[in-house]
Length: 171
Image 1 (spheres, rainbow, N blue to C red):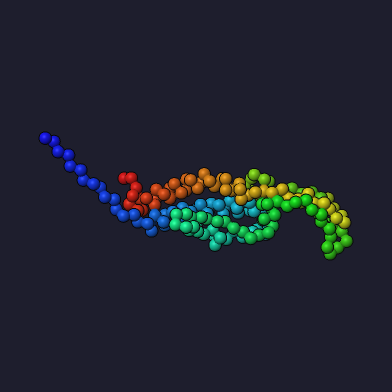
Image 2: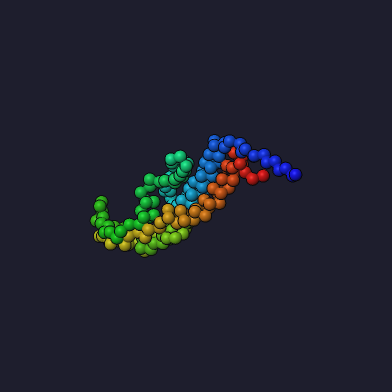
């Protein structure tokens, strides 16, 4: 009579700290990619907003969630990202407004980049103007859409490294 003996394979305990470290490293890498995209949108600005690394920390949210943020408090950047409504501009410290008559913006909606832009002659003088407003660039939404695929790739690799560092990867 044939006998079959089965010996159970008992997995090693999870190394939760090693797994958490790998996942945090993946989120940090993703945060740096997101910050790089935001910095691309202002690369030609003279007074660039600050996207400090301090604002790109990996945040633990609850027991099973992580989040990374890229934040700036720059008001001009907010106007460019969210746009502005049409408005009237009048002089405050002079009798007339003086401004360049030719203008090409440094960015366009749907493009995560910045060009040199241009403002120049002919010089205009007016007692007031009706500004058409700024078309919203929505860099935040465009970057989020772009980084979704990047997040899957980076975090997929981080999950494999996390399993390996916890001795739970396939051989």
